[in-house]
Every structure is written in C-alpha cells, then in structure tokens.
Image 1 (cartoon, rainbow, N blue to C red):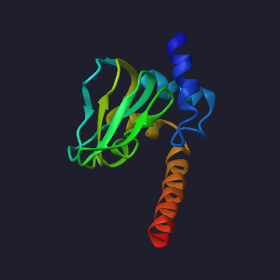
Image 2 (image 1 turned 90 degrees about the vertical axis):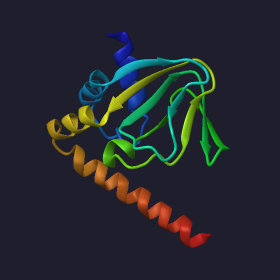
Image 3 (image 1 turned 135 degrees about the vertical axis):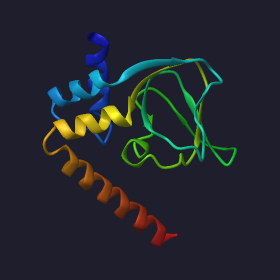
Image 4 (image 1 turned 120 degrees about the vertical axis):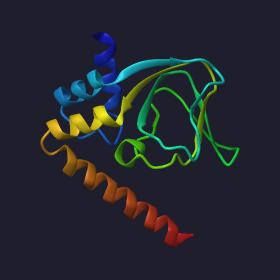
Amino acid sequence: MAVKTSAADQLANVPLFSSLSKKDLQRVAKASTEVTFEAGKTLVDQGRTGHEFFLILDGTALVRRNNRKIAELGPGQYFGELAILDRGPRSASVIANTDMRCLVLGQREFLGILDSIPGMAHKILTLMAQRLREADTRAIEH
C-alpha cells in the first residue's frame, strides 16, 4: 500500500490530476499498474496509436521526435496524458535510457475513473482549454 500512496502523491503533481482530492488520487493510483522497463526498451513509438499514460517513478527516458532527441525525462515526470483522452497517434517516441519503474494508467481504467468521479471531466476540460490557449499563443508568437 505504501507504493500506491507514494504514487498518489506523485500523481498530485501531474496537471491532469492535480485538482483531485487525496481520495480520488488514491483511486487513480489503484487503477494504475506499476511496470518496470529495461534500459533500451521503447515505451511508446511515434505515430502509433496510444492508450496509456506513464508516470516515471524511477529511472530516465529519452524522448525522440523524428529520430532527434527533444527531451530527457526523470522521476516525477510523465507522458501520454493526451493518449488516454483521445487514443491519437503518439507525437514522439520514448525510450528507457536506464532501467525504469513507471506507473501506467490505461485508457479503459482512466475512463472508468472519469465516470466515477463527479466533476473530474469538467476539471480536465478546463485544463485542456488552458493548454490549447497556451499552444495557440505560442503559435501566434512564432
């Protein structure tokens, strides 16, 4: 149970889940699965349909877009939040740079939680609108 509590605490730092209560964060953590990956393993592949969210608990990952390194992610960082919303194609590949331990939440589990937590959908829509506005502002500035 301690691992799930720690995972819930880390989920609280993810914007998608940051407005949830401790009880709801526990529900998200319990619906998730802890998965280990060996260094070199491709976790997600650019262009492929995605349906999982990953929260890195231990280790680091390399993010590549069009075979170019664009970022390195470590503990507490995450990826795949859009995939659990729309099952769209991955915008980048993510490869384990070291052995990793991640909390993985599938779309089916996420949608079940979304249906069971009143108000969560509204919070997510608000967050997505904010992100869209930020992306729009960046596009206009460039």
